[in-house]
Length: 279
Image (cartoon, rainbow, N blue to C red):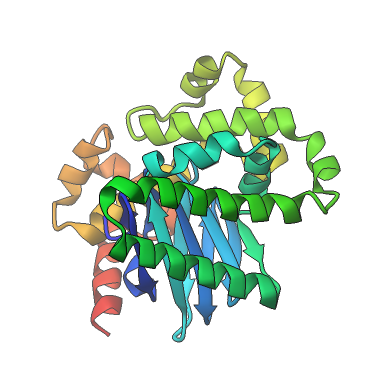
């Protein structure tokens, strides 16, 4: 996939090749928007990403790039789970992770923007200059410092009270997302996920409606649609092969499904994507 971040990297990107793709990580990614604007879907909720915004993505979040402006640019740091473990365990307030799931895009005032920009520069310097034997320790402290700063600002707000009534629902949704990422496209029915969560399909429906405003089936279908789009744009395999890989009964059924969700056939989407990439 074009938008797959693995391991420990840092850099600058305009996301031009990420439009229409999901962003995946096996650890955590910090994106600092330095210019322009993008529109991203984070766990199926569309959000703008503007200059001075910090986007924090963890492995259990689903992020899809809807579009970017001509001047869009982000600096980023991608870190593996090993680099994050120490920082994760040191954060005293676990509600910080709920906060980041609710608000993965953090608007920064100018002083905070400068601090995060300097933090990215320091991480880049560590990658480039510190031997691997000492790198993990230094980076762990850097990550802890950043999360500690986010937690300090988070504690000044009344967001905990706003979030309290949703905590149980959020826990269910986090587990649902993890199951969906692991089992799609093999499992397409709501009952499978409800059974795995030891809840009823009706309760899962209520939780999804409360958090995202749509049904669990719609979330399953959206995830499946993203996987179809990824194979259509990133590979040249046939429609029939895509249907086989994604466990559809046959290619005609997949085409009907895709048209119902997107309003176009898979071939129309593939041709349109290739034409837009050439223009």
